[in-house]
Image (cartoon, rainbow, N blue to C red; front, side):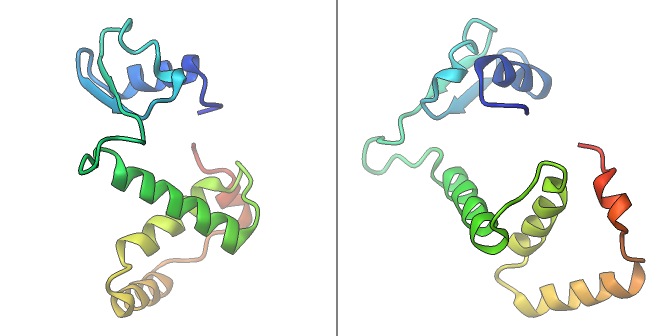
Length: 125
């Protein structure tokens, strides 16, 4: 997505979500057009009632991703973002079994040729 504007968010939701679906979001004003577009939009403030944890895990995952990118890599260009996201997902999915992650990584390294810089930068978005 180019930005978090209402126009971009509406286009993304229309392309990925069935008409009439319930869409839970945070309170960002950019989602304001979803109800007019025929979705059952249910925004939630992040200051929700105690015990209400609707988007807690999603926000934690995004927060962890941001921290990892800023702390580990300092800066990530849009050109290389898909590769960084692939790495993060690989690490996240194996976070509870570090030895399995290491073995998987070794296995992938043995079975596949490394990607060149040109291949990485030509990936489809």
